[in-house]
Image (cartoon, rainbow, N blue to C red; front, top):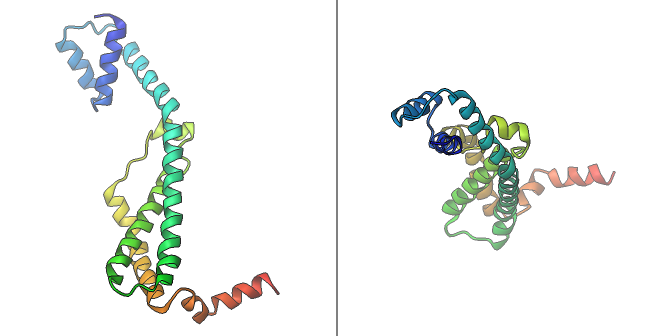
Length: 176
């Protein structure tokens, strides 16, 4: 087998999750000479990194922009628009959906923040959502958002801010 084909096989095996030892054993079983294995492996890893550096910045930046846009959209709609509509039926499921949507899109925004930089791509590649980390990090904010959304929907938008005199303090801050 020629060198180019061997490098393509190594790239395929790396993409399938094989480690260096498993790739070496696979090539031995295929009766391919391993005298240049280290050089071929390094070349395959460089091609993979080159491909990642070419494609991942656009994908990661797009994922960040979309997740941040969804975060702002969900935050605005569930805390301002839906309370204005004065929906009382199905308030609990709506609050659960809103809290989950806001926390998930916010988590994705944090996950993809600055993931388009070359050093991040070299170290991590593409960020992956780890369910355990998401539950650990987002459980408390999700519960708090649930109560804020339901409380805001029951009292009406802006009522809670007025009641807490946050609005008057904000006006005094901007207009002394």
